Length: 318
Image (cartoon, rainbow, N blue to C red; front, side, top):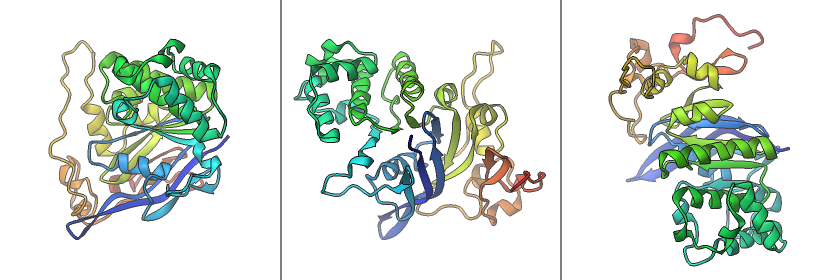
């Protein structure tokens, strides 16, 4: 089975003659059968990272590897067959599906383009059943389906390539609450049943908490904390992660209100000096405005980027 690895990935755009670094040196991996949740506020670079991970954007620095081989950015020519097993599920299923073609034809085309084989009705039915839909939906058009059903069709189309890794870019944000839970559970089922690695990108930390094996927290283009879901949720070590968890509503019976994080994500074209989070951080000290922290191993599988953690005992073997 194949692992997805991002090593020092950077994505830089040009805006009004200035460089805008949307992704700033991200290291991340997704093992086969693992669900990794990537969370953060809008504008932190999650979608840019998703597109770089699957080759829709060429990283300005760093590399993306699938099974140890570099993922080539998408060009006009067909992608190598091995790399077609890395698939992206987009945020809006209605805009990513062809409204003029029946669902079954679109799935059949996906099989043919990805594998070079012709998909019969049995293979189309199998794909629909994999995502929890009635095979009879092959005869419908996208506009005849609900939002949740359309997103399941988008997932089925990605599965047509027999992927080993899926990158899901905000796949539930356009759905209602019940459909969100169903589609999120679908990704977990696929990871466990088929051994597919899933990079699940969302701004909804509550959903990610329920489905992810590990959580990576992103702020202004950087991963500021990463670790097992239970550790990150129960004992967040970066102040930004703590602020995100405090903003999640809790049905605790005590009438506790979510805590709002003041301010907005800074302009990536002019990021703050030092720690990028320090203008909004309730724990900031003078050094935070001048020192630029990097990820520090707190345990063998939990890391955070905060200078306030530097005096903690070293992890054995670090």
